[in-house]
Image 1 (cartoon, rainbow, N blue to C red):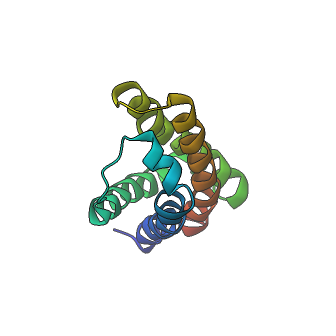
Image 2 (cartoon, helix red, strand yellow):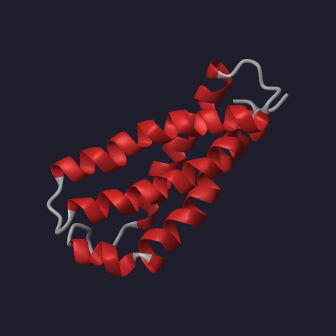
Length: 132
């Protein structure tokens, strides 16, 4: 694997963890707890493994979709939109459809906000990792 690939993985994993941990386990922890859908003892290594797998997939896809890499910001935001929408479909919509929770609208609002923030940040960083 190339240096750009691993930089792209890192560009996804590090900011995702930095955003996700406080979002889910500190700032909005009481709200998530009130939704009564998550375990009390989250397994952080599973979350990190999930981020590594996602980061590898999203970094691998970037150079195959964006062959002209002159505009890091434009391509990064487009990539963030593309992978963010995909992620939102299985981390937000599918979870809301399948899991028992006290408020689907609150869950959708929280996770949509998280997903927007995460992919506005990681999309351009993945593009920067793959710049020519």
